[in-house]
Image (cartoon, rainbow, N blue to C red):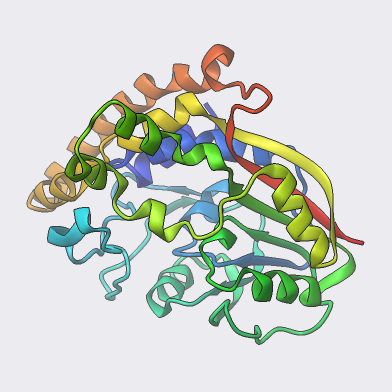
Length: 305
């Protein structure tokens, strides 16, 4: 199953993320990311590295260099940390490189540098003017625009730095992403339980709009919709909303106490089991297909007007 094993390897403590991202990446295979490329808000780069065909050994994952595990369930960014111990073990290089990666967190960019996947790395606040040239990029990708406080600014900046015939690929949440909150509240689940599952997501996701509203917002900033690709349905969303989310901090902490060889062997078997368990959810169309109006997320492919 394309992407699933690699994602289970790096997100082994959060298999619901591996399941979700497998479906997203498979849908992204329908689009072309060409020319001078920008990975906007690239994070630690692992996501895009795997999408480009890169692979890691079982001895590496995105939980190698983390902090604040005790605060994990309070929504702490446990991956906002970097030491020289962070050493990706690459067994296959990606099929292509990305020209620029941009993020506001210095530690993310340091992790990106270890991948040798981006030609240039830029630290910048997406709520401000970006330190990038006008009409420079053929392709701009981002899966976190909805996190940015000043949505008008970032969309205007994307338009400014995109070539006249360039394309933008934005992955955005839709209102159904929060259906789990309404469901659990309606069923009488306590606020403490809901907060444990939510981990501040509903607060941090600052911009969640319907498809039509997103199109209207894009139009206001000089874009037109070329292609709309739904990625994930509400079945996946229910799995993702719980998964191992509440336990991940403890699981990572327990695993970190293992010796290097024990950790490697345990994780290799863990990933094998996870891949076998999750594979039918992706391959069985009755689970993975998105029916009209059932999507909780979509890829918006945009061009300039």
